[in-house]
Amino acid sequence: MKMKNKNLYNYILGIADNSLILGQRLGELCGHGPSLETDIACTNMSLDLLGQVRSYYQYAAKIAGDGRAEDDIAMLRKEREYFNVLLVEQPNTDFGYTMARQFLFDVYHFLMLTELEKSTDLNLSAVAKKSIKEVSYHKRFSSDWIKRLGDGTEESHNRIQTAINDLWTYTDELFHQTEADKAMVAEDVGVDVAKLKDAYYDEVNAVLEEATLSVPESKYFQKGGKQGIHTEHMGYLLAELQYMQRTYPNMEW
Image (cartoon, rainbow, N blue to C red; front, side, top):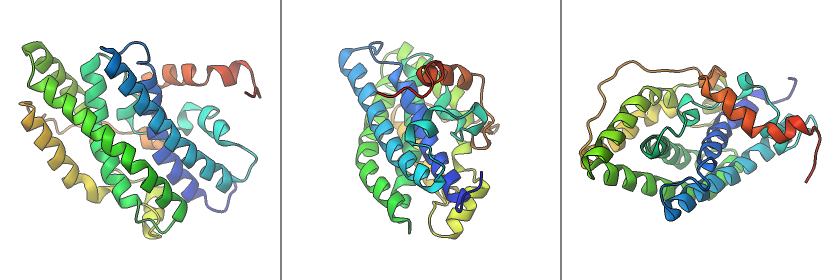
C-alpha cells in the first residue's frame, strides 16, 4: 500500500477494529438478551461503537486516498488485515462472558479515549471527545453487571468468575504497541497505551473486589490480534459480518 501516512492509517485501524468487532459481537445479542431491557442496552452499545467506527474509517479512507469508502475498509479486508485485540472477538458463551468481555474492554477504552482527546490530530481528538460520553456509559453498565453477577447467587458468582478467569489472558495485549502505535506516539498523535496499564488493573481489580470476585493470578497472556493473528472465532465472525458484501459485490443501499 503506497500512501503518505501509512502509520496513521494503521493506527486508526487498530483503534477502529476493536470497536467494529466488539460491536458485531454485541449485535449478535439482538433478540437474544436475557431480558428486554438488557437486550436493548447491548444493541444500543453496539450502535454506539459502530457510530464511532464510521468516523474512524471515514478518516482512514481519506488518508488512504485509493477510492475506498468506509464500508470497503470495514467489510472487505481479509482476516489478517484486521488489527483488533483478541479480547473483543471472543464469543458470547453466556451472559457472564458477554459482560466480562465488555467490562475488561470498557475500562481500557475509557482510559485510552481520555488520552486520545489530547491528540495533536484534531480529527482523532474530535472523535475521542464525542465517543467518551458513550463509553463512560458502557463502562458504568458493564461494571454494574459485574457487581450484580459477582455478588448475586452462587451460580451467577461462579459463572462470572469463570468468564473473568478465561478472558483475563487477553487483557495484557491491550497495552502492547505496534510499530504504527510507536510512530504515532512519537508525533504526539497516538496514545502510549503502555502507560495506562497500572491504572487499568487498579480499576479492574477494585471492581472485582467489590463484586466479591477473585483477581486471576494467571501470568500467561495471549497476543497476536494487533499483528493480524487471530483466534479461530474471528473467521466465523467475519463470514457473518462480510456476507452481503461478498455475496453481492458492489451492492449499494
